[in-house]
Image 1: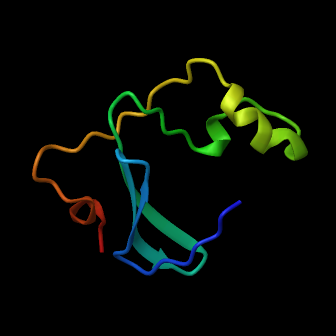
Image 2: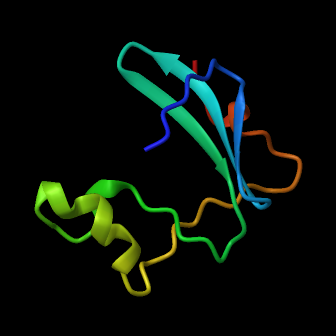
Length: 85
């Protein structure tokens, strides 16, 4: 596992098409913005099928046709404009 430290506003590029941005950090909560092509499924771990904890990382890649997450923003919308006070 690669572990990185990022500050608010910093980005992480995964390949050529995926960008993860740290939008906000408050206490134990980190808000991330993800820019990815529509064909890339983005799932929170709690939406994955239940599996034993020790096998979780190895089995994530074996999921067949996960439901897509609709995260598209209108053109010109910045992720930070969706964060309320």
